[in-house]
Length: 467
Image 1 (cartoon, rainbow, N blue to C red):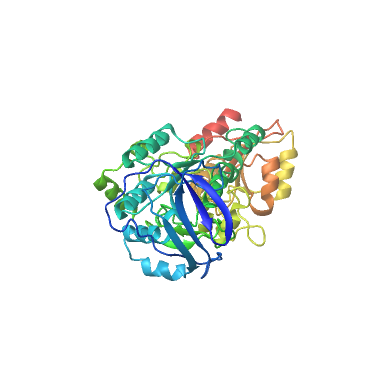
Image 2 (image 1 turned 90 degrees about the vertical axis):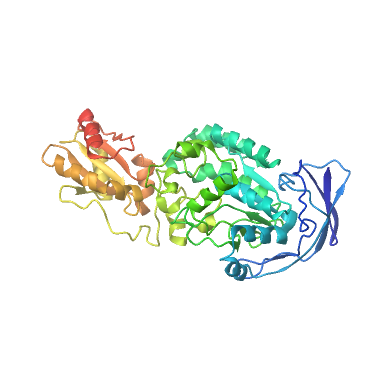
């Protein structure tokens, strides 16, 4: 079946394809889809006011990659909608104590076929379950980055079978992926941050999908990432992406499970006996692309399994970039690993403070790097004081410096964020913080410590193998 959208303000017809749909619900609410109203970032959404109708027609659909077709949906009735203005900040306050089911019902009631669930993980199964329980039409889309775990692909297939739906998969542009991999390799994100890869494989496909919608539904929870999601409202005007009518303020973002605790979420999934990704039973909590996801240990926060080599304050791939506060966004500095304030450096107090450690200035590190015959070898950490991982290794690095005092090995630190970051990346192999370098006695080229084990014994073994 195909459908056509016509507007009274234009004679243009937009065609799109319809996929297999789940069975219609007997709930009497199904034929009734309410009026749709929008708001801008603060109060009103800048949308043209018009009336439109969606009617099934017998026509071959035309391909339009900028619009997400009807993907996973319950059979929808003819829709008439009038776009008005609404204060979504006020609506968020009114719904802040509402249940996830009530919030989902409100979202689907307001937007009908112009809203879709973004699906990727456990929370999103809950979203589909809530959507099903409302008895209203719903749509689902997902981003296939090409780097997902095999278990994740099988999970997607299981969800489709369980709910009798077909998700609409969005893929990255093949030419962009090819250019990125050919120029920087398959794993460049370990060296210069995940932002570029995520931008190509996730953000741009999402942008194309959202350009065909007036609203979308996400599985964000406040407790998922205290640094970036602690203030996520249940509904908001999307501060980053554009909707069907174009321009910032043209898209509404719903977060029905924003106030749900992670434990309560899993209790709900078990009670409803819905499919979950088998990786969860292997210690994975937050699951993304295979190279950028790993299991977490007991007591670790779930986001510590994502982009573990980067600053914990900025762990967003770009899909929810609007969550980043101004200072965290500045710390990204183009690749997700740096810190940049008005003066180019962070205001965090310094770390690695010990009389056994040498503090190198820019001139000092440049001189050390130029020497070909040093009197003694040097171990230098390139760090940023705000970096969670630098802070975590402070105790072991200071202890190492004290152990090596008088041994003939100098231990030093060089603050490489802010204005020094570009130099450190170009000349000192800085990929992410912390980066540890060993400068041998008789070689100008430093040797980079590749392991993530930064305890005293591991670092000492590294030094003993080289000096």
